[in-house]
Each structure stands twice: as structure tokens, then as C-alpha cells.
Image 1 (cartoon, rainbow, N blue to C red):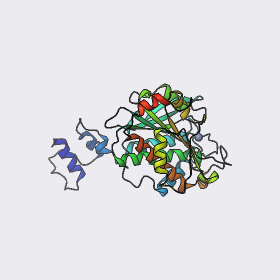
Image 2 (tube, protein in one colour):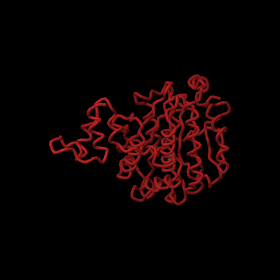
Image 3 (cartoon, helix red, strand yellow):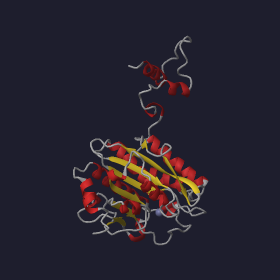
Length: 335
Ligand SMILES: [Zn+2]
């Protein structure tokens, strides 16, 4: 055992303090950091994990996260505001404690300018075990601000994305890499996702992305008793997994197929990447000040998150050649 590991174990256990002659290894956090072997990932020792802090699709946990993101304090998370920064810090902290590998320019952050305001995408991933393919899951974190709190649009998608990330980490490694991206600047014209597609992180080259999954407004199933899964066309791998899993959620109606030309999937579709865009129509409060946390259809939002997670893991371990499928079909636009 590495000598510094012994020191760490002394720190970790509630043993009596070492004799006074010993170096003071146990009295403050900086010493713990210094004791980490240089060939180990420091976060494995100093970062508390939240991978197992609950079930991934626990309704109360998702409610609490949504309540924070859609709180009056964050005031609708418009790019460049304190609320935007608070939302990004919250998401980055969750990415970090879930053990995602940072893939931004600065940790998880991929900075960008949205109509003159400084904001960022947040990018992290779980490496694959036996494939170079990548599945990307995205949800935009911004909204329009100024008392428009954006609970459905799109705090709902962000909490669904975080739930899927936790499910993936609890599941353990899959064949394909799975990347999670919280986009900024969507409301200003898909700015974060277009920036991502124009400047993909070195670890996530677009030519290896075989599927994009978009989560935007997944909290209003009750408005029209259904959730769209745009982009899930007959014969697509995504459709196979959705059909196989949707019976697990009998109270959630899934409408398969159709194209959407609005949303963060657009840039991916232009790169001929198949997508599934989960979206529930909101009859009344779309971009209105009544898009608040109390209107969210939580049980169905949790179902949609879980179905998205089933889809992600199903695709990540699918033995089919998804790169060949992408090359053949693109996103289905020309079909
Ligand atoms: Zn949106």
C-alpha cells in the first residue's frame, strides 16, 4: 500500500491522533489533499459522491431540484444573470458529485456568449467500455428571466437529465460513452447547442455521436395527456427501445415520431445525428409567468425521465451498429 494511502486511512478512520512527533496529517483538509497519491484521481478521495444518495427517479428529489431551479431567487435563469450562474453552479456540482468526467473548456463549463451575455454549456460524460460511439443527452438550463421562472421550460428537462445521469452511474459502465450537456442560451436561438455542435469538446467528436436525446418541457403531460418522442421513426434503434420500455409506464402516453424543427436537436440533426426529443405540450403557460413549479405534472415527469433513462442505457449497450445506422438514416429528415 502506498505510504500516503496509509496516512489517508488514518485521516478517514476515527483512530486516536498520532503521537505528537508525527506530522500533523489529520487536522485539516489541505493535508488530506496533499496526501492523495499523485497517480490517483483526487476526487475519488476528497469528493463526496452522490451516486447513491437515493433512487434516480425519486419524485421528492426531482421536486426539490426543480423547486430550486425554478425558484423566484433564480428568477428564470436568463443568460448572464445571478440566477443563470446559480443554476450552472448547481448543475456543475451535481455533475461533479455524480463523478462525470468534465469535458468543457474550464472543468464542466464550455463558455459562450448569448446575445451579449456571458453564459456556458455544462458538459460531462461517462466513458464507454468497448465502443468509440457516444450517446449525448441534452437539456437547456436557461429561460427568459424577469419573473418568468421556467419550471417546465426547462427546469423539468434539467432535473430529468440529472436523474438519467444518476441512473447511468448506478447502472455502471456501458459499452458506449454517455455525455450529458446542459445547454445555455436556448431561448436566444439555440445558441448553446449550436455552439456545442460548432465546437465539440475534444473528448466528444461529433463523428462518433450516434444518438442525441433532447429533454425540453417534460413537465406538462397532463395538458394533453401525452409526451412527444420526436425523431423516433419506424426502424430506428431509439424506437425499438422506446416501444420495449414504454409499457413500464402505463399512465404515460408516448407519441412516437414526427420531426421538430424547434429545440436543441436541430444542430445535431443537421449533422445527420438521429435524435429523440421528449416534449410535452403546455397549453397555457408556455413562456408565461404562470410556468411555475406548482403546475408541474410530477408523476409523469418522473416517468418520462425514467423512460429517457431506459432509452439511453438501452442504446448505450445495444449490440447493433449504430454508427452504420446513423450513416444510413441521418436524423430521418430526408425520409
Ligand atoms: Zn425550452
